[in-house]
Length: 219
Length: 210
Image 1 (cartoon, each protein chain N blue to C red):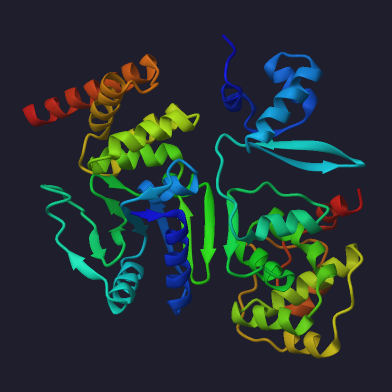
Image 2 (cartoon, chains in turn brown, yellow; image 1 turned 120 degrees about the vertical axis):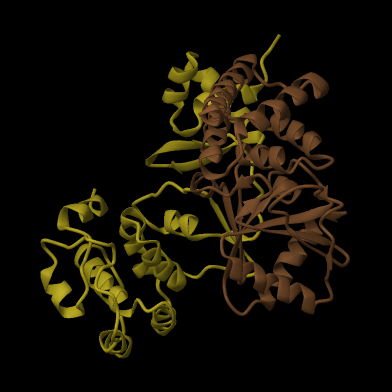
């Protein structure tokens, strides 16, 4: 497990090793640690806007002894999977797309913090977008993490609903459908405090989208 | 059952005064003070002003770790009469952001209010050559010179040494706009001297005299 201190040390080390400024977005458990919602994480999830920047980090980590790992076990049957690099810590590196989610402009604008570790600039996405990305990755522990975010943050549900519609425009997936399933299970199984109106709204949006898709395929 | 204090956060997010908080929550002033006290204890509130200035409370829905040293927005708010709203928490780890670099970074944001507020920082410069070095690295030497002259016309600013001034003036191949499509109607002399368009008019700088 990687705790806050170790993550800090790693970022500082990478930042000092880099020869040019590289920006990335931190998501998942790593981002939750910045919000004080988690003490440790299994992996460090980073998203890059530029493919070249990610390649630079991959090169650097490999030069430091990190080995590339198979992604199929962690992300079976998924697209846009990350590059996994492991040594004493594991890095999951995504380029713009996080499985079913796209790092949208709205997400980039909603960042809550920027931490500069010399040449490594780490941007922390909002709790709402953390839920969105958790919904996309659907790994073990993602539901628990989402529950924790809902418990510890005053979630702005309107942002989540809007972003789910936005995601449908950016990717081929009917995102509100995923979101509905994810949140419904969170509420039913883990008793997450999600307002009924929110679920109803997402269900209606999903139904409308499905209808539209159905009509399209019929034609 | 008593509601947790966090339930008030959604209504109070942003900048507030005690009276505004009392109005938003429909409570007495004394209750509003107590609420702010409780929220501050939990890390949701930052206070600005005090003393002669009215106290303003910046209430945030979320708590974020404050590691490292203050970033650009905090430095500007510390030294400038014109305050800016931080779009996000900005922290610098492993080093301190010096005034010289902060001015250059402010120009790079290309944001009107950030650049306007950063003019105050010229008065805190300790090392003009260091300012020149940062300006050279980011290719904003003429812009620095021009904004320095604007600052001199409005606020009390230390004198730049002649060597740095000449080095800034000799800079070549720099874009003319500090902010895209913005030109001054009044600082034409400075614009001509530095071959840079100033994004302000005199009225913008009145805020420094208030």
